[in-house]
Amino acid sequence: MLLTFEQALAIVKEKLSEACPNPAAEILPLSQVQGRVLAEDIAADRDYPPFDRSTRDGYAVRSADLRFVPATLECLGEVRAGEHFGSAVGAGQCVQIMTGAPLPAGADAVVMVEYVRSESSRPEVTRAVGPFENVVRQGSETAMGSVVLRRGQRLGASEIGLLASVGRAQVRVFRQPRVAILPTGDEIVPFDQPPGPFQIRNSNAVTLAAQVAAAGGIPRQFGIARDDKEALRRLIQEGLESDLLLLSGGVSVGKYDFVGQVLGEMGGEFFVQGVAMRPGKPLVFGCLQQRFFFGLPGNPVSTYVTFALFVRPAIGMLGGAEFEPPVFLRARLGKPHRRKLGLTMFVPARVETRDREPVVNVVEWQGSGDLVGVAAANCFLVVHPDQMDLAAGEWVDVLPKGQ
Ligand code: AMP
Ligand code: MG
Image (tube, rainbow, N blue to C red):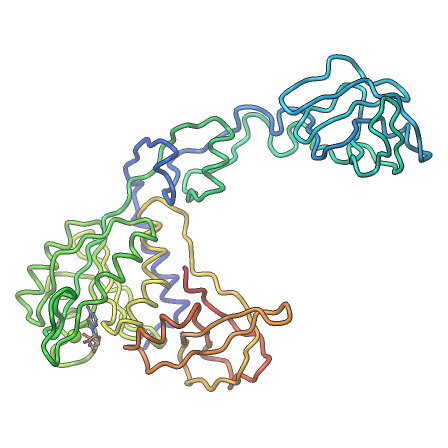
């Protein structure tokens, strides 16, 4: 029996979490950690913010002085970001303050400059403020010593910014897994050579290499395997030197689809052999010589989709990251869509915002060999096996293409 898409994904997660020893780590400067996975917890080196910080340009005041407005206050001077006001604000007094500056002692709020009538030494305030309005309290974002980023977290732009703000110029990250990419097929030729009339350029290997790199792995290419058991065996053995082996093509039920057979003969253990989904039904996942392998169906869209759903999270876990499953978002269906019974379908589609709502429509495509259709799409419409014919306006799942 075929596994459902959810069951197959759960197996990938389970097998990788059981087997994954922590990968080796290395220390890198912040300029080199984009997309990498943290190998250490990061603690705040001081309170954030480090002082009660004004979020506005305006006047630091005692909120109790503004119970009745307009109120005229005595201005003692100014405090700029990076400075500190030397004396305390007393009853009826205020200090002009800039965004990012520390709140002077005695003051407990900031009035925005827009609500102050004159900038003389006796400004008139026209609006009341509550205690600590327009102020972020010291330590309210995080207290000194608290963990702000965890081991296993992936570093994107905002995380790298946070590392910089807590004073980490270099951090310990996990080494990236090496991912061997092995395309198979007698008809497949290198993409930079002219193909014969019935030959097909090897597009899968470059697609997969780009996907591997985006998933945080290091792609390794080492040729194209013929549909020949001996050739396959030799190249599979070479691929097992990497941390993960991806094969494309040759996993279906055709007379020359030898990939499953050869992996089995070499002692491979299979955890997934077929998934109730389209494209991607013949997917295999297993383990051989203590390395995981995926046999991805060769049709370019099948390869692309099965990578996004199953291989990307697997590469993450091999690289020490938390399990990062594909996330489906919701959109309204533009035109009605017929489904195929019993399978999870991933249909190239475009989602656009209309009247403040996401609306998705499938693009024209000729099935799982059609990269032209996928290039015109920005997502996949996900149709679950239990969904009846989908009507226009229904909320449906979509898988954004970037994942
Ligand atoms: P297979 O899974 O081997 O039966 O291949 C299915 C379809 O995908 C066939 O039409 C192949 O020509 C095509 N295909 C297989 N491998 C590749 C590849 N590396 N690049 C482009 N197309 C491929
Ligand atoms: Mg083939």
